[in-house]
Figure (cartoon, rainbow, N blue to C red):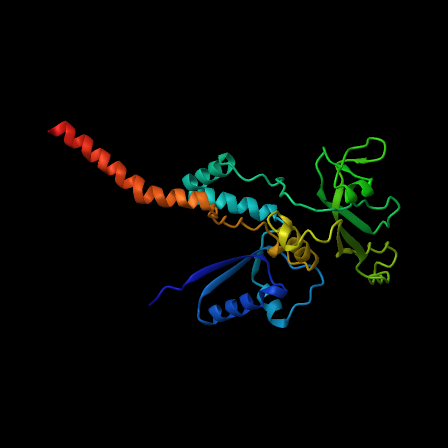
Length: 287
């Protein structure tokens, strides 16, 4: 007799286009007799084409969002009755320990950028969201001749645009699920037809600068912003993240000729001379 191995996979969105390797791994582990449970934070986007195998795997997935409050309350009551000390200790830790601010902003740098603003008479089925904004102390320079020729900026209250200003936007198109009205249900012809459902399609991420992702500007949060924008457009939410900062490499300062001679003479003459002086002082005290 041997114990059955139990595993839990926690995935951002399952299944999706990028989980084919995980699909094969889950299928292989279950064939080997592993009791494997898949927990996904989000469901795949509506209308996403899934293979037959992915639809079969989706049957046994537990989704955390949207929250089923009845199951949530029952699960909490169950764990309180099972391990009350551990439950309340964990709850106290979550409520009192410091967490990173979810509203914290990552600094980005846009060289020679221009601001963006949605049209006031835009279509009703388009939803525009501001992604990047400047600080309250910023302004939009309108004198481009002074900026480009003399590399000098100065705030002019009459002509310049006061901040904050939008540097990047995301656009979502809200489409109706079907163009034709739904057919009436037999026996309920007199009732008003149900409103057609709508779905969102991510169509655009516009930024007021094009060279913010070049090599010389990769020290800021620019790579994260660009990659997360691409992942958002392709509906790969599980890939959206803020990458950890790379460790800074220590750089050795290059010495001048004078400094190099000073280090050389000090190591050859100064150190032995100090040892001789210390030895002489010790001999003088002991004689």
